[in-house]
Image (cartoon, rainbow, N blue to C red; front, side, top):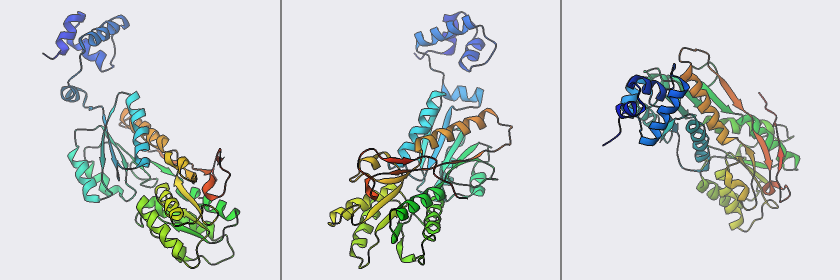
Length: 347
């Protein structure tokens, strides 16, 4: 039979209420009594019934995580950062992918009512009204790369604009003038900010900004590979390509070299994110480093702060800086990558 809280109380010679206070971290309980109860819990392998406990504490000790997708290194790193922080504080995760579809987002939020204590949501296309409408039970939420300051939720953003502008500026400093941009989805805020950074950096050149060098993309490796084939067929090729994320950049690298061209001698390539595989690409990929795991961990800390202060109305809106990591794909020497800390952020 399963061990109950009454069994623990009987073995520790205390009341059920005292055991409950110890397990829920509440005072007052003498330290000697606390240690005795913990020892009995370990010896009997007692685990509190989650549903019954949540009725008493009104907490599930579970955090909801809603991402556009759960496939790929970027999202794996975000989840790793969230999980490492949550686990240290005794929380579990409920993870779902929405594929950026509003109906799917709303369905997930509705279906998990009563199952999570709060949400970490990454959906650059999501508006605050939709989120508020589906969090009617007052759950706190932290938005990743979503809403602007002044919205009713805590949020963390990446300096997409500054990172993109700095990388294109670096390519210009290497002598490139015909620089293409493989963009992300048109309705994605991250992609839009990276496109804006590319355009503003290109405007520093004494030539007219050419929209033919802006190529539509969708953040997928397959798209990068297909675009690489197209670029090799152009009569007037670009000398460099800045991709809106590393997945497309890695697809580009493979396609360009499969077509017989050399990187970076014939065509330089740079990406955005610095996913773990970027350093092992051939050649190693120059990119804009986003502290991906830190993004997830910081979001978790913000959410737990909101849970510990439910009556606080102060919302925090943070921006994580990006860093250039310069490797061989855009002409930097092979070996230890050159890193530029503290990339300038243009506002």
